[in-house]
Figure 1 (cartoon, rainbow, N blue to C red):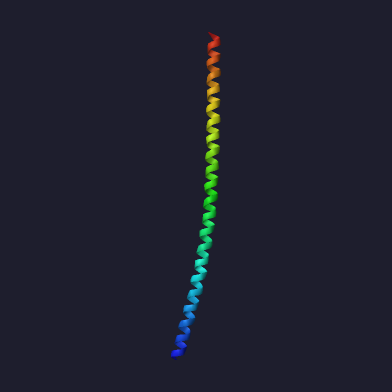
Figure 2 (figure 1 turned 120 degrees about the horizontal axis):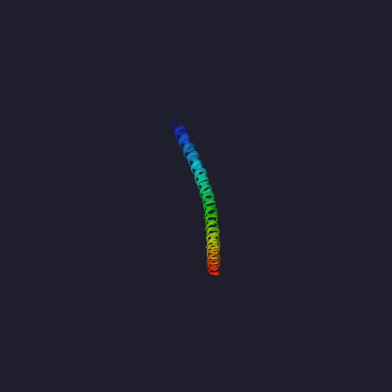
Length: 78
């Protein structure tokens, strides 16, 4: 009887260790996946920030050119 209890206990402990290893592997996979996705999102954000800065610069240049044209146009009228 004691031998059976010991065998069942050992089997349970072994199964628990197997589950722990499987869970640790799953956590590692999810952590790596999250890190990759996070890096991809960071790169996408930085790219969008660069595009935004370029668009703002382009817009400011267009506004300046437009203002200069208006000023030149108003000076030629008088």
